[in-house]
Length: 373
Image (cartoon, rainbow, N blue to C red; front, top):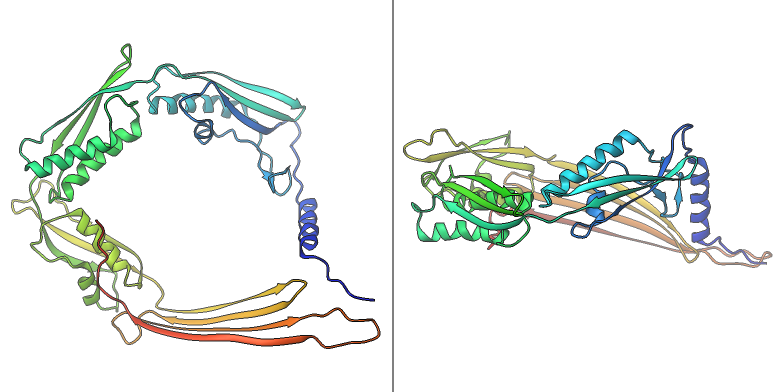
């Protein structure tokens, strides 16, 4: 006679079956569950993109197979579906289809309390970008003006479909091209003239560069009892240095790399109107993590070949002896046993082994900054 351990997959299936039976959902009386939502008539816009915009969604399936197990049913609501149809038309306009119409939202009852929903779309002709013009570049250096123009042209292409998101992204990219080159107060105002009968759009950007700026005094908030000097070294920004939002981004990453702060905000103080000297003071807001932490964990692994028990104990200090020195200790003891099938009349002990690992590390946070191209 021999003992055969129950395969792990059978244990998992039994556990899942028990969970499913205990968590069955039902469709409330007088309502209907949504089994499927589909889109018809869409060619340029994918059905999955449209389905993400609507609140009428199919009931989720447990393990991709069973509805009503573990998860509740999604219920059909006529008012919600009507608002969904309006959302779809609005989404199509944002994608450049100003004449798109949702012809119907068909609801087919599969049974008394289960429905399938089909959204029928008529896309129409899209609006095309015929022209994109930038005003206000005449006072800029050739390189700066070229950077602004390139930022727009990377996103907006003549002859492409006019969509709202790229239009907004182009405005942000043009402004960033200026703020990275010292124009802290730069503004970009966008406008679109859409000719619906001709199905074309003419885009206009009014650039207001503002003065060239330099960095001013830096105030650090939230350091508490921790020293500010490592933070200021990591920032690597001095008064009088030419202003750049790229430098601000690099500085934020460098301070986070010290490993002591959960979040870092660098806020430029942009007074309106700009002062005559165009100096921009900075406020650095720090949110520290817990300096000391203890890690406790463990696990149990059982299979037909072996049984393993392991623990994980650790301790970390993120400012040991000051200067943001990190010190960690990790202990990972483990015990593994190998069960054997034995005759009924004889008994043999399991073979086992114990293992583990221990490690410690200490490091000092570096203020060197990783630059990106």
